[in-house]
Image 1: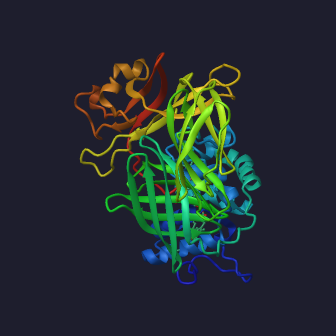
Image 2: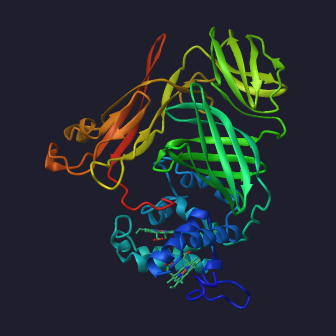
Length: 483
Ligand code: HEC
Ligand code: HEC
């Protein structure tokens, strides 16, 4: 800091640095600021120095996991199209160029929130002439309402103490990669200097994949790692607290592809992480894989369920179960631990996740790759009230489906969006079309399109279908660690 920052940021007599001690941010937030110091203000840092400064700032001026809980999706690069502020005015003022999560993942003094608003107008003077700003007194509103709101809801407060323990050990994990399936597995960490050597093994129902690499814990418990299986580089963005990891991993060059994961120390007190599948088709034998710790072999089954433990080792128990009763939730016990399952005949309805999302055209000789979209069909029981889409519906998990895209509305039909914008595979993966003008389209427009995605799940009593909304839009030309 003395070498790299002191030339412009004064360190006061009390040791506090101007601007730098007026804010707390996530590691990605600090990295964006340090990158701007380099890009806009000519600060010269080697990659090692940049990493060291971001680590130091994250450790001393970070957020607690509670403070980030609601907005971690943006750090995890979850492909969400939904991101809103606490009200329309905040969303329109501070959540239209970038996510509102970028705002909500910072804490500042009232004065520093004011500096940030000044910085925006100074750096982006056209801000006041853009949509959702030129129809109102933007500056007046920002001064009178936005800055006080930010100061009240995201005050500087105190930085949490950084994690100083040793997270080395053997962890049992479970999760799901949309489009591919559920997995159990292992995460093994070994401390190496300030970092960790990491191995992650994902055991899918039909195959296994193993990754190795390096990770680190920043601040109170922000785990960041880069791993590879020799072909594909992946990143892990996890929260670490009390021996428990939780978050997401994704392909470094295509962050839509990835999965959520939970992991606990293999020697932790007994805990069930997940059961997959968590549903039993009535009258059929189902192999259920339960991941967790302290999984005993004693199986207690309720009336209407029969079965046995096929195997139990290394944090995974395989159960062979058959339900014969009525559809609905069932609770079994394995080694004294409760495992929640659902018995069903057929789903009452299906839905698609995500309900709304974005894919981006790309490639075609251009520098920005295509951004795909991954959909899954989820099955549901109507629950006790017998009504679809109410609070008591019971989730059955993902079902294999057949997939199609159609024009979203009359305008899309006129432009033949479904024909040009891309195609969807039988695993629900939408691959957008190439970037650039298309001579076959009116006015040689690009291959963007407004699409309805339709999933159809076959059941013995007929097909069930559901719809989702997909914007196949243009490239993201500027991509930041926090979008
Ligand atoms: C050459 C001058 C210069 C140096 C060196 C410099 N900064 Fe800055 N810094 C600025 C200017 C100018 C601003 C205000 C404009 C802006 O935010 O980009 C700023 C703003 C900031 C802010 C407030 C931005 C915000 O919105 O939170 C932080 C934090 C910061 N700098 C951190 C650093 C750190 C850390 C270093 C050392 C790695 C550093 N700066 C080095 C010039 C500098
Ligand atoms: C005109 C588009 C635009 C609007 C509107 C906008 N921002 Fe930004 N904001 C940006 C851009 C671009 C950056 C990235 C600056 C950089 O680091 O190069 C940014 C960065 C930020 C950052 C990170 C800065 C840092 O260094 O930590 C925060 C926090 C932020 N904006 C908050 C806000 C708030 C609060 C509002 C509403 C008052 C707002 N933004 C409105 C474009 C916008």
